[in-house]
Length: 315
Ligand code: FES
Image (spheres, helix red, strand yellow):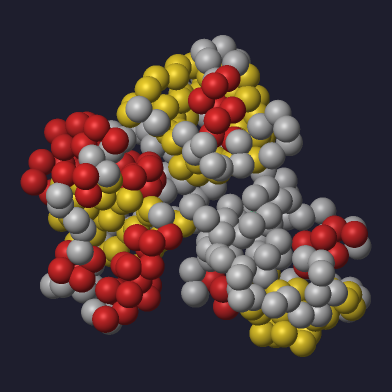
């Protein structure tokens, strides 16, 4: 798999959107146009310590001159958001990847239900803007602690009008997934937010028999590993017939790399989609949060996913 294009982009502007969210825009120092993207896409931001963070693009896909991301300060996170909050300033150059999109958006479909939790609004805001522009039927449920802590709220309120349903826990309104989704089964459902919100919507969608292909979500965090016990398995490389053992303490990605397969990776937690590869046969224990159930039938993320017995990889 070819490596993802990485560009040194200049920070064009940094502004405070809420007390703990900054909005950064990037441009290319020499080229007027950046690679195209569509609503739901994210970029990898490469930090000086070698780590990589994924951020959804939240600007206008028609404006190819800049990428815009929003970064929430996470004092208990891994340090990436704090570095950006404390260091990012106009003129700073930061390596940023070309966009990738695992959050499929189907603007042509009938009705749409968008549910955002806090900073999870970032991939959904460009979707809402496009639905407005195309005159599509939709509702955007926006859950946050308060109006002042909800990024882009004023802009979305002006844009969406009564199609925006705010739920602010500190202001006494709480989102109830079951009542919000009742009567909407069959609409395209898009969800992005913290794990608790996603889990509650999965539960409601299951009660309402929501069709699998119409439920699209983006998670910020990897699956919990508390109860998962990795076991050894084998892979066969389809192009050569070579067999490789993956011991319980190693990832498939590391074994493949050791054997000459230069797979790209970024998060190594199953959340970014960079290391995706195909397989032809075998039982895969999917541990990513990126691939849809349909895609999981032929693709896997070797940084976290494993096999049962033997897998035949499309390499
Ligand atoms: S490296 Fe991000 S999903 Fe594998």
